Length: 74
Image (cartoon, rainbow, N blue to C red; front, side, top):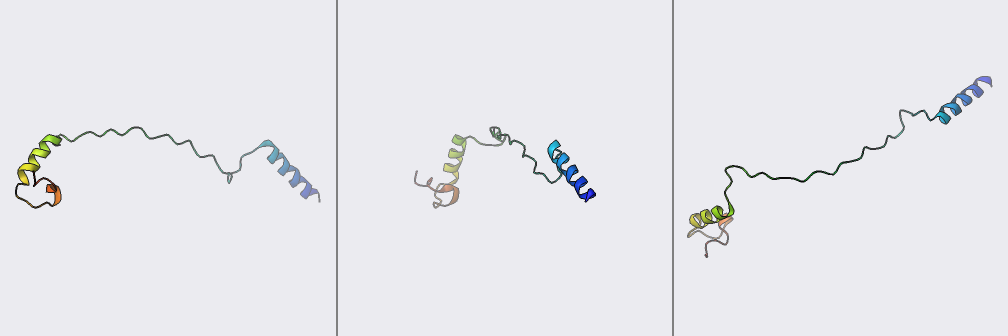
C-alpha cells in the first residue's frame, strides 16, 4: 500500500511540473513559403524570332507534323 501511494505521488508531481515525455507529439516547424522561381535562359537558347525563322526555313514543303505543325501553309 505504501509503495502504491509513493508511485501515485511521484506521478502527480511529474504531471504537475510539466516534464515533457519522449512520446509526446512535438509541434511541426512552420513551413516557409517557397521563393519566386527565376528561369535563366541557356546561352545557346534561341530567341522566339530566330526560332520562327528557323522553323519556316526547315519546314518548307513538309507535312504538318511535330514542330512544323501550322508552319507549312504560310
